[in-house]
Length: 61
Image (tube, rainbow, N blue to C red):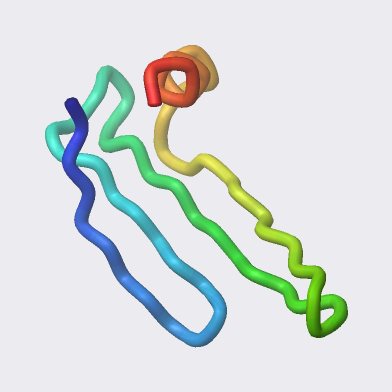
């Protein structure tokens, strides 16, 4: 199980994983866009970890 430290600023949320993985902590940045009153888009990006670790996290959760 991964725990996260969360930072919020405007429409952005940054999650930094605890404990650290092989290449540092799993860090996920999200940005929310409101396109219409009923439609929004969330952009999710990984930072600071290799792709395999990120994909394994997504499959588990």
